[in-house]
Length: 270
Image (cartoon, rainbow, N blue to C red; front, side, top):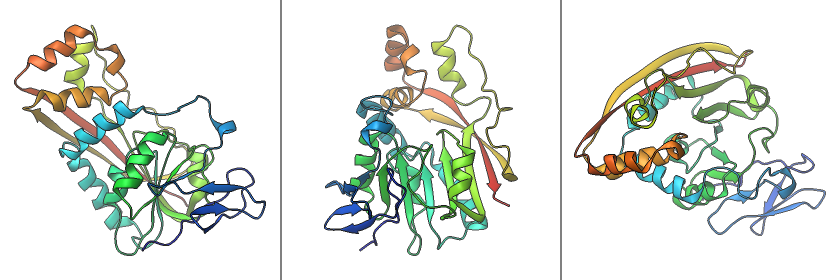
């Protein structure tokens, strides 16, 4: 049985203790654990919309796509860096964890893995499926954990907030970011836009942490099932730009090849 998570109250930043399926601080702010096992640490006054983050349809599409292994080479590269550089018995945070695909693959018999996402629907799925990890609904701009708590933070296609990530990282701890490289999903973009542009890889929001490793991972994804392509489209930010004609074209194709192209950057808190 996993131990209780080490959270701070999002309202007063005091330690939360877990008892009777509820997290409570000394100021009597209380946050119930949902039946799926997660806790919602995003008070309504901190929300910028009624249901922030990805919707349920987008989440289910992404889960189906990831379950079919198209991004497993990325996971393998992430785990290789974690095993080489990380202290694998210490707490790890997946910031912007979505449905927990990357979170749970970092879980071992000795570490505690935390996943946080602003989208409640994603956290529901993550907590129900990966019960050995700690999942919470929350904002990355103010994480509900104490300073210097994590030895490893991952950010995969999520907002990179260097100041807050640095706050929760231990000294000598690591931040691993995954962002799109130039040709990521370029063939899919060519179908949607009249003039497809390569990703700009020169911008990085990390300025103060020390860059230790930068690697590029690129490989073709071959789709023999159009459902996989449609799931991929549904989980991208340009899905809303796809015309009915493009959707029909993807549905009718027997095979489609698209490039996966990632940049992994590993930073250390010095």
